[in-house]
Amino acid sequence: MFIAGISFFSGLMLIVFSIVLYWKKAPLQRVSCFLAIAFLLLACWDFSVAYLYSGLSVKSDFLLSFYFPIDLVLSLCIAPTLYFYVRMLLGNNQFRWKKQLGYHALPIIPALCFLFYFAAIPPSQRVDMLLSESFAEHWMVVGITVLYYIQSVCYFSYCLLKVRKLRTSDYLLVIDQQQINIRWLMYLSALSLGTTFIYSLVWTFSSSMQVSILAQQCIFSSLIVYLFVQSLLSTGLSMQSIIAVPIVEQSDLNILPAIRSPFVCKLNISEEEAHNILQKLSKVLESEELYLSNKCDLQQLTHYSKIPRHHISFVINTYSEYNFTDFINKYRVDHVCRLLNNGQEQKLKLEAIGYKCGFGSKANFFKTFKRFTGKTPAEYLIVQQSISSSVNAKEDKE
Image 1 (tube, rainbow, N blue to C red):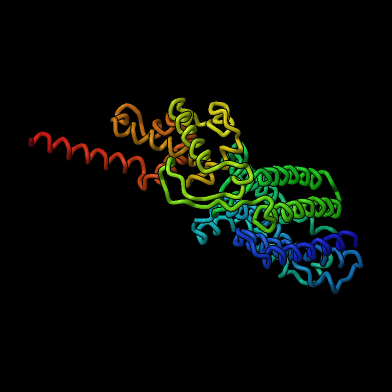
Image 2: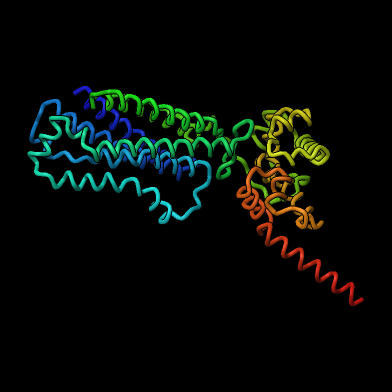
């Protein structure tokens, strides 16, 4: 009965969290609504577990005859839910839902098959399986549990690597014109990965299904509370951790828009001082060519420019159209264009040029280059070669 009580209380808590996230208006409302729906699914999982253990505690054949292992299906939705939440929060929500959701739904198929198999068993046999705990030892249940662990490790590892890849030295990232600190996302992914490992050990070495369920409930309740509190701060329900970042249309970093950021005013940085900071940063980057290193970060730029890192971060985010990562990538793309215009592609492959200019991977190089120029490196090269051929043809005619 103790597990049933904890599960029921956890389900009620998740419903309250869902209502708060769904109805409270926030700058990142879409992300909050998605998390609210995810919490509702987890609440259904809690209520299913609570129903099962309520029937087991009183050994009620009537209650157990109406139990179906929906919780096994919902448990395989936990890790993908966190994956989609992290992806949406990081601004990467432009993808083909139908195709990708099909791939992510594949692990749920075995649980659905077992659900239909269990539903086809006569009620008396289902009750006997649950009361004798042979249900937990069934080979399909064991297989689904192992699949859950493998799936969780894969998704949580991906989330952790994704956040580490996008992080800057101060963990600030601009999403939908809002500047957020993504450090907590890395902690959440790491904690989820660690707790999954701990729970897998409990499940492996514990002979009691109730002990493993109790451990799972305690672990996930703690993670859910942490996720809820941090999401309140990071999606704008609490304005202490999120700062609106205006988007400007000027592409020239030397032209400052007439914008006064509340944070800049708080730091007592005038527009003229911000202009001087941007000019100094440009000179440092061009003279030292720091952008050619894929390890170029805010700390390195602070060291060479002798400007406080928080001044650099907020001046870039407020007085240019870029965040820090794109601010550096703009110099890298410009350098790539110069190399391609000078015929450097004859000596190096396009991928090698990307690495030479500070990009850490081929995919990142191609994606960033197209975002800034509207063309892939190969397309840009074809256009430049066409222009050069036209100029040479005119010169030959003259």
